[in-house]
Length: 388
Ligand code: NAD
Ligand code: MG
Image (cartoon, protein in one colour):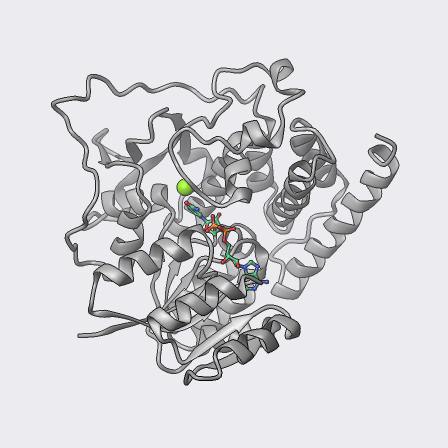
């Protein structure tokens, strides 16, 4: 049986690794692809995987892509309309959301309403709109299959178990490139330092998020929605080598973990074939050479971004959107050398304080909160950072 998949964000880190999984599995076919602006890369992907539909963000890029793919039977679309068309495309069965940011919310909802199972990498969508996404999945009878490695691990640990007997989630973190550092030592770090992740190779935004531990904060909120667990039943455990991908503890005290080498192709492939497992070429854990697995506690004093995530989850409503949007903007500025590393949690905290929480926000209210946060960030930047 052929499995037909559409990918939002095909040229990124998760997108290209998803296509690598497709390349190795002849029973997977690609029916639609969407990317932001890398027309070169998207053209190469179209020629190799033959989707009937492809989306790029701007009209200008779409024109260029149309010209380049004139000899192929592929329809080119653009903008949010284009993303929605890819998400709802009739042919596909699984929608892989490998796009970065809250731009994924509307296409994910459109995909679910069109009956697609969602292989979800785009954690920002669950963090900000989990209260809409999860009930919708139930209503439309579609599955949300986690691609994020930690959540795939938890999902695997819960296989065949009664979720009512789950006591807590032990969400593992590598600790990032600055593990063990104190706050003062991080004042002067540069994007180049923060982009050196010890174990994983990922997109730029999530790599910075791993250095601030905001990624773990987002993942805590992602786990909360995916598995229906309150934040105070999610414990962050640092495991520096990223071998234990996460664990669950049941009410009787039994702890089950999923281990493996740090390779996103495993969780991607697991999501695409769930509940089946398939062979996967690549490095494997070698217990004859491994001598120890170390666990540590995270340092919430140094990594304020993690503490703020628990505040955002506790505040609920539109607060996680503020946390996420402020972080997104701050990370972009940090990458542009406009603000320092410690300014990232500082700005997130200030935006959260200034925000008046909306309970159970609609998609429109979530997007309005995002816009409001961007505006507030802009204002704070001009006032406090413009001179630097
Ligand atoms: P990335 O930056 O490498 O790729 C992002 C993709 O989104 C690119 O293909 C880009 O073209 C596309 N995109 C951006 N804006 C777009 C737009 N307006 N229209 C259409 N496409 C657009 O990011 P990534 O690291 O692959 O991460 C993607 C998502 O997966 C994020 O939510 C991230 O948190 C999550 N995630 C990533 C990893 C990882 O290992 N990289 C692991 C777990 C979760
Ligand atoms: Mg992860």
